[in-house]
Image 1 (spheres, rainbow, N blue to C red):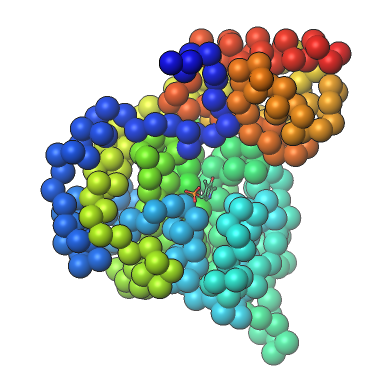
Image 2: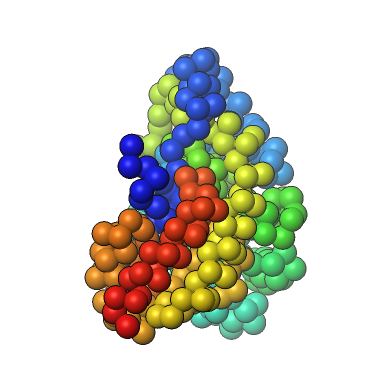
Length: 348
Ligand SMILES: *Cc1c(COP(=O)(O)O)cnc(C)c1O
């Protein structure tokens, strides 16, 4: 199959559905979800709400849509959203926060995605008639461009308290919130209890083929459901997605510790390799970032070269990103390190 010859660490989104998911898809009861009649979607949404400690939840096709409908449900149009300068919502979501939701973004400095509460204090607008109104704070945990960095529970609580003190609503881009929970060995509610809304992905480390969830209070989810419809995200027999999502929620989170252990192993192996240097350390979840400037400055070229040697990595210029996931095991970490060493030796 060639599966063992290619080590794919571009992202945890490359995870294929498990046999159990495919089996669940064929057996699950279905209905029209726009009419709220798909029992499998309803079950996934109520399970998700319970896990996040919220009143209600909504299935959406992607994390991008989950964040967008959350922003739309919180407000938008002329209001200001505070988010860190490396936020996924700002970098990778087609500017939907401005172009669709209508927010003005206010970027907060951060250390690999981790903000300082005092920088939020400074950024809040006074009620001066010239200013847009600061109304929403977005947090991201784990932090993607931050290197998979995790925000510790106490700092997370402080950031949320700071936002609330200024009357802001708080949205958590928790695409990988289960990774953050696993990293600190805490329940996911440790984070979700502080926020008004949370988005998380079923389709990354949890291995579902499609889907994300937004959770919040009933009124908020009602508005998010309307927003989802407005942008064309109302789905019909979406139970075929939800069936896999249910298995992902049941089986996925407890497996993530293996991804984290593999990331630690890979990071320790890379420390032995001349030419590649760990970046965005310490490694605390399922991502390993590498600085390749000692051998080549062009990120695309290094990605190509690693790929032709059987290791697929993500380009995050001037770094490359390797993400552990269910499709790669401990032996693949050793294989990845061997390929990195081979490529480095070629250039040094
Ligand atoms: C992947 C990701 C998203 C978007 O999810 P998609 O399903 O790819 O649209 C949002 N936020 C973060 C932090 C992510 O890593």
